Image (cartoon, rainbow, N blue to C red; front, side, top):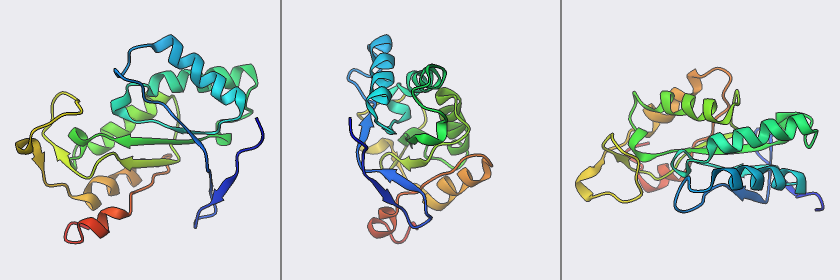
Length: 171
């Protein structure tokens, strides 16, 4: 596979323009196959991986990254651009940092390159699921939620900027 073009962000970091998604449905249904798929993607030259807590694939991606390092497919974690996302039931000021810490633990990484809010809603805490009722949706304080990620010293984080356009009163 030829080199994947990159885009330079305003802060000087680069992001590969082609990423590899880590979701499968039903979520978490084929662990060994997924891990091998991620490892093979790294071997082929993919460097951007898009994950999320709800996909239940963060741990498998972390294991594949560790394998790729030990096999010499990549020289360092810094060769990769890892994105993950906060799921809606963790979109509360007291749950964001623990959710990000769990993501980092699952991935076996010290930081992610981009940490996004998966959907701009906050749900009642409880089981993770894709379907929810209108009464489960709660107000979300974007700055409070994502601002707490900066407290995790070794984590780099990103924040979706379209929430300011959609919900200017919340930003």
